[in-house]
Image: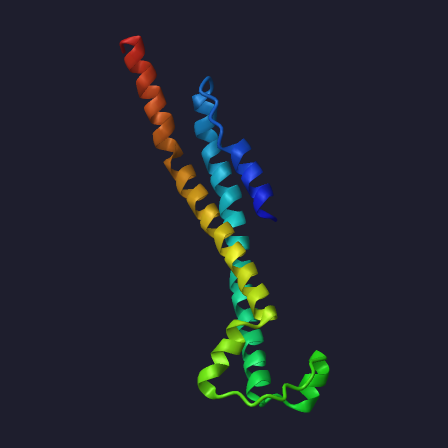
Length: 144
């Protein structure tokens, strides 16, 4: 699920109908379950992406350090890397690798989704207080 879809769902779901506060209170567990499931799915996806990045990083490290076998190069359809790089310069090649940068960007995007969903869950957890405060305010206005 992309970020825009999640935002759209949150915008729709987080509206509180102040004329039916009792029903809004009853909706809290459903909302919590919906966004908790989304949160867990997206967090698992983030972990999988991090594992894939670690694997790609290792492969690129072997590639740039000249330790990748000929068979591995052929299976990945990579050309041999003919430069000899000093150990202290290897990180510059890894940090500048286009494939690794793309994977890092995807991880960053996924981290933002997970963080956003985590804040939505916190907001849903506070929804009881918001509804309670609205009820208390109405009582105060009515003099009860």
